[in-house]
Image 1 (cartoon, chains in turn green, cyan):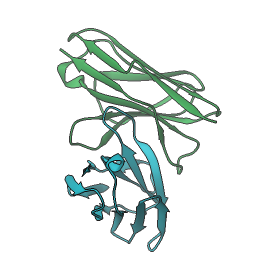
Image 2 (cartoon, helix red, strand yellow):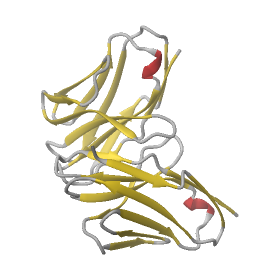
Image 3 (cartoon, rainbow over the protein chains, first blue to last red):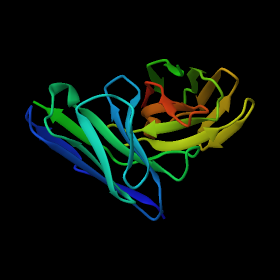
Image 4 (cartoon, chains in turn purple, brown):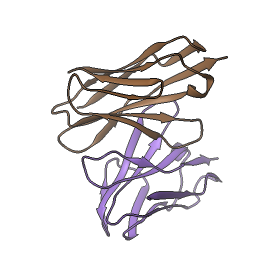
Length: 112
Length: 109
């Protein structure tokens, strides 16, 4: 069966520090991969999605970036975190563009 | 722009007190409507997909229905373990999912 792993679960970082969040999917090939951010009381905001290795689409201009170095690995990065980057970050995957999403367990990021 | 509005924002129920959550949407070319359950500090968990008006899906005490402009999630005789935030998402022709802000349900024993 397919599983998605996302880590770390919690992260506290100072302003201006770098960020790297990792997500891996097991049990499937060539998944569509997504990074979302969830703010309290608001809907999930799509940040990046990828339909294949090295293919990244950005939905929101920001100081975050994403990479997909392997088929089932998706990484969210920042060179310098801002206070506004705080939030709950979710990785997700699906088999195709019309299918349901499966989410990871999330990373609570606090930038202080 | 696709819009998804969920109401109410919060719902407090007594155990056994049935109720409904609403998800209204405006989208050009609905390809699917999804319901998710999210527990605090966790990722959303998939519940249902609805594709066309009139469609219904059931799972235990939950039943989801779809019309041309909204979807309802009915909770029948809820139990404390049904306490969670319920998210609605719609998918349009551009394959992007638009999520609502969610309804937080609290069921008291």
